[in-house]
Image (cartoon, rainbow, N blue to C red; front, side, top):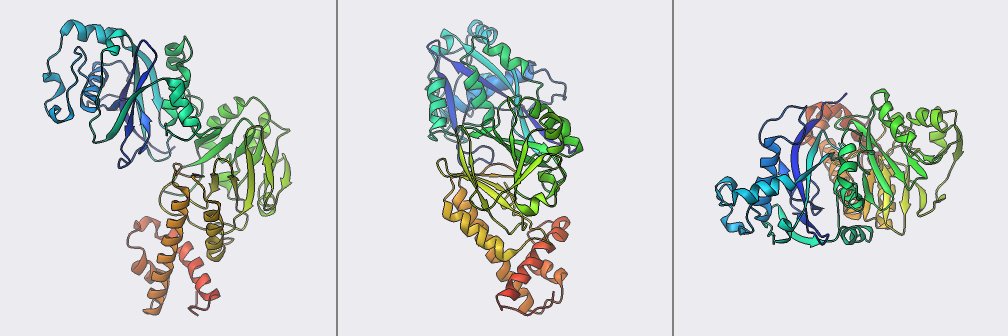
Amino acid sequence: MVALEVIKSASIILQRTSGEVYLVRRSKEVSFFPGFWVFPGGKIDEPLDDSWEGTELEVIDTVFKEMYEEIGVVAGSDYIVPPAARRTPFFSQPYNEQRRREFEEKMIYIGKKQTPPFRKKLFNAAYFWIQDPLVDELHPEVDNGELTAGEWIMPEVALADWESGKRRIPPPILHLLRSMKSEHFAAITLSETLLPVGLQTKVEFAPGYQVIPITSATIEPFFNTNMIIIGDELVVDPGANNAGEEHLRELVRSFPKTPKVFITHHHEDHWIGVRVIEEIFPDAVVYAHRNTVERMRTDLKTEIIDDGYIFELENHTLKALETPGHADSHMVLFDEERKVLIAGDHVVGFGSAVLDPVTGSMTRYFESTRKMIDLDPKLVLPAHGPPNFAGRRLLEKYLEHRTDRENRILASINGGAKDFDQIIQDVYQDVPAKMWEVAKRNIKLHVEKLVEEGRTNWNI
């Protein structure tokens, strides 16, 4: 099992008695959920062991500190400290001790929520909620640093903005906003704390699109494969290995009906989890390219699909497209209405994709990338790593990156490189040495493309 770096944090939901909650927008310059709307909060600086409850003094202090630093709120005072005056530590700001105590007593702990482990780092946040006349008196002001905007908004309005694509909201916050309509809100969210990813909160990035990282036998720097669920009807790439199998089993058991299963390509970290679906839904059907069906093992019924096959779901229509390059079996799904591209291994959430050294083709990869650019996707859901909300630009950057690599490989060859090791030394100094053997796969395919195009006769 991969060791994750878990960053402990604390956040607070400030809610007026009229129902509005206070959301803040993260700067587009931050690395984690840039441009997303969240509740005020931040990292807990004081050390806490892994058995932390979420209600420790250090957590409460973090809530108070983050309210002050991010939005100028001093618990126990209705005075809002302007950003320029927040250099003074929060604990030295004046406040009414009785009002501070009253504020703390009315804060309700509603459990912890984790961000999805798309990388080897995740945030585990303790959430507090307060709805009280004390909040009605507050008029927060964001710091204009990590946060660029803040507003009071009804939860249902924020959700409608998200549904229409006007507002980006990360999965844990989205789930909390949805849960607030229940009169048992606090009890429900508290009870979810120990549930696994995908059941603790919906990991949803567009209406009906869940992206759930599950441990798989993939290659570094990744350690899991994103199983994507569309509506309650279609499952993409259940690639759990032995370490991720129980997680997958819990998720599959929660499905309300027999799903269809789509496999993007034949690599085992994308299909091996079908054994769990076989166990729970033996009548499920697997849909995939012929070359995938011939190379995978399953007792489920399989249906070979070709370029242009349409999945007509209750609320989604997706077209399957043949996109060889990463592998000769590779296919993607595209939602024309929402401009969502389920990209398999053609792209990854960070870094660059590695092609199959046997069935991959750099020539086909370039062609498939151009085909995807023509779709003009807004959201790309890769099989590894986080989603990307600038889909077309991401694909264009992939072409630029691969073209640059290819030109530098050709320059290395023309400069006298005798083998792949020399090309690595010339071209891949920006890549960690432990990844050089993997990089040789792409070099081989780049050289094959250069030979095909008559740009070199270098002997592989």
